[in-house]
Image 1 (cartoon, one colour):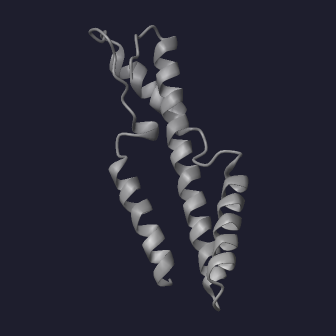
Image 2 (image 1 turned 90 degrees about the vertical axis):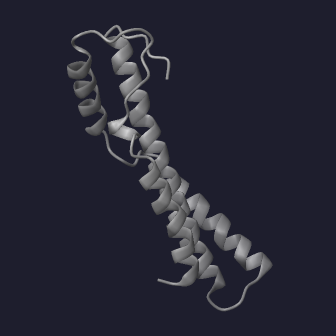
Amino acid sequence: MTKPLRLAALPLVLLAAACSNSGANYVPVIDGTPGPNFNVDLAECQQLAASQPALGPGTGSTVATTTGVAAAGAAITNNKGNNVLEAAAVGAVAGLGAAGLEGQREKERIIRNCMRGRGYKVVG
């Protein structure tokens, strides 16, 4: 892996590690005292969120856009040898990271909506 790819991948790995309470593991903030079925309801809503794909239908366009922008930027500013190729690879990694984060947010939205549907006052 080239140095630019390693540098681009490092923040994504750290960000993923920091998001342990996100996606299908998300626990929403409930206004009031949770009832006796809270844990069962939460587990079922988390299972519903986990059943969704990690990357959504817009992933391809996100990756293509970030790849193209990064490659074009490198070609315009400093076209030396493999710079364009490396920039395109960094753009692709960034696009995948962005799509993955959006997938995690979508799973959190699923859990919040599911818990609201079960009568909980979800505030966050």
